[in-house]
Every structure is written in structure tokens, then in C-alpha cells.
Image (tube, rainbow, N blue to C red):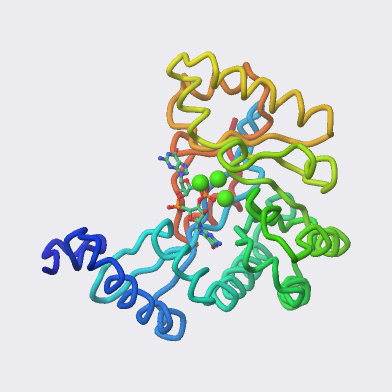
Length: 276
Ligand code: C2E
Ligand code: CA
Ligand code: CA
Ligand code: CA
């Protein structure tokens, strides 16, 4: 039964035997999403924890289907990865984000999420190089966010692709740190600029969970000793911001500083930096 509300995607009741059908329907729609102009990017501010100044934006992909409504990225990105659609979609994201960031002041960066599947493909380095040259965005203003899962895939050399991306002059950040199969080995192997601390730790710490506080403390110390910055994700309140500041995170991102914004609003904010 179709959900009459329009918001979200609830074509079927969540019964196991129907999930395959829902996936099939979504996948077919996803194949046409780009050409039908159903995708757009929103940009969430990333802020210097000490000064409150804007350091950049993270580009976040949005899909609005004419019938299903808004489909959240947590739902369609994994599907795009499995259906081998993430390469063309990811390429569109990269070009769109670089074109937009080229219009911002030179001290404002853009961060783009990259799936492990994209890094499998050695052509990805060319895609990034082309997006940079066509937009004339200086490479150091592009930050590629990868998760720990890129290091899990066997038989492909994600590390080599990451090295070639670093050779282009772009920055790398390690996203969702602590939620995956963390290994410290690749932190010493790959030159990340920033470690992004997942929102679950920020939330835990603000609720007084000693384990979460200990983990943030340890990650900040580790990052500092490796010359990397830290971004706390999902900061929603003053209390969370103060705690994160005390723990020494260099950058913050979250609803407290700004939700993901439509392109025009992000541009206005980029061109009129924070007052404080
Ligand atoms: P992510 O990379 O960890 O992105 C951060 C997510 O946290 C975003 O969800 C953002 O809207 C949300 N968020 C930011 N601040 C707060 C906060 O204060 N509170 C709460 N509750 N949430 C906050 P979003 O936009 O739904 O994206 C979900 C995930 O989808 C992303 O997680 C990323 O893994 C993936 N994704 C989004 N865009 C792309 C893309 O262009 N390419 C790829 N490969 N993945 C993408
Ligand atoms: Ca991210
Ligand atoms: Ca994240
Ligand atoms: Ca996440």
C-alpha cells in the first residue's frame, strides 16, 4: 500500500518478502534519477571550533522522486553502490560541488563523500582531476571524505588510489571514525587531513558516557600527534559544543551551527562569513 503522506518512501509494508520488490522499484527509479534532474546537493556548514568561523561545507546528496517523495541518502546510496550506479552519481556530485565551490571565497572548502566502490575504480582519479580543472577549483579546496570501509576491500588497492588523489593536491578526511572496523594501521599509512568523529560519540559524551568521552579524547590526541585535524559531527546544542571544545576538537559540524542548506543559502553564507 502506498503511503498517502507523500513524504518519505513507504510503498510497501516492511515485510521481508517484499523488500526485494521495493529495492527493484527503487533501483529502476534511481537509474533515471540523474537524467530526470531529480537530484540536488545541499551544503552543511563546517565551523572552526575556536573562532566559530566558517571553514567549509559538506556537500550532501538529495533525491526527490516525483512519486515517492524524498528518499534519504542512507537508503539510496547503499542501493546505488550495489547497483553500480554510484560511479555516475558520484561523478555528478563531484562536478556539481566543485563548480559551486569555485564561486565561494578562496578560504571556504567543499567536502564530498566518496564511496569505497568509487575508489575501486582507478579512473576515479581522472574524474577528480577533470572536475577540478573544469571548475578551476584549486585542489586544496576539495576534501574527499572516505570511510574506514575503503580499507576493507580485498584485491583492490584503495591506498594507491588515495595516494594518487593526494598527488593531485586534494585533502582526504576519514569519515564516521570509530563506527567501522577501525584499525590504526591505515592512519599512519594514508595522509588524512581530518578525522571526523561520528555523532554517536558526541551524543554519548554529552550524556555523560565516560567511554564516549574517553574515545573522543583518545582520537583527538591521536590526530594531534599525527598532525591531523578533528571534526565533531552532529553537534546539536550549546552544551555539546562546549564539551567538544573542551575535548579539543578543531572543527564542528551539526544542526547547532547549521543544517544542510540549499545552494543559494550556502553561497550567501560563504560570501558573508560569520560575524563572531
Ligand atoms: P555522513 O557523511 O556521515 O553525513 C552526515 C549526516 O549527518 C548527514 O545526513 C547530515 O545531514 C547529518 N547531520 C548533520 N548534522 C547533524 C545533526 O546535528 N544531527 C543529526 N541528527 N544529523 C546531522 P544525510 O544528509 O542524511 O546523509 C547520510 C549519509 O549519506 C552521509 O553520512 C553519507 O554517508 C551518505 N551520503 C550523503 N551524500 C552522499 C554523496 O554525495 N555520496 C556518497 N557516497 N554518500 C553520501
Ligand atoms: Ca561525510
Ligand atoms: Ca560522517
Ligand atoms: Ca554517518
